[in-house]
Length: 246
Image (cartoon, rainbow, N blue to C red; front, side, top):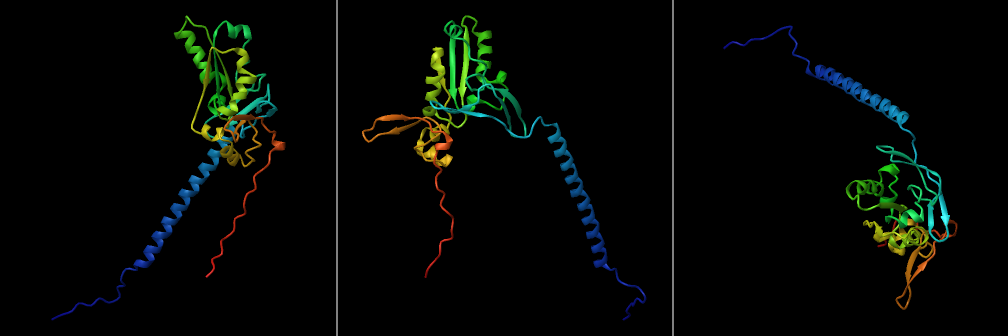
């Protein structure tokens, strides 16, 4: 029985090959992720340079009967820094809409007044593209026997109770033939003073918008808005770890 022996031949050194392969993979991964990071930085820089502006800007005014609205005849810049940048001007009433039509023009037409929150404010689109303006244009094409005019009174973060003042102060003087209240799910919170106050972090009895309270006899009364300087911030309890005793 014979055996074969090899002399002077070393077996393959696999650990060294594995280390070289891992080193090669590591350098390739480093170049890959470095290139992706560079592309991201260049793309972000290019995107920011191409963007018309970087931050939202607006001026607010205070009305003792209405609360906070936009400053009349002011510029509003609105963006999410992703897919929309709008620059609009408020009208003389402090809303993002065209200048209000005359009483004579409103009386001679079928005037529709839109009242609501951010969906009516619609800062994300130019005024010419807002739904009430498009409605007026479509009505002129499809309903030629009717002379329909529209106006919009909308401020973000309000509910129907808060918006009663928009009608009393602005819309009712136009004597609209149709009043449209745009209602969305978060209006439930804005219509409830306690929920609205907790959300804003202020005393529910001193909200910046018109609010409603129920008396002991069940009657509902409207409370005037409070300017931010007179609002009381709610105290935030400090967080601490509860100690466990044996």
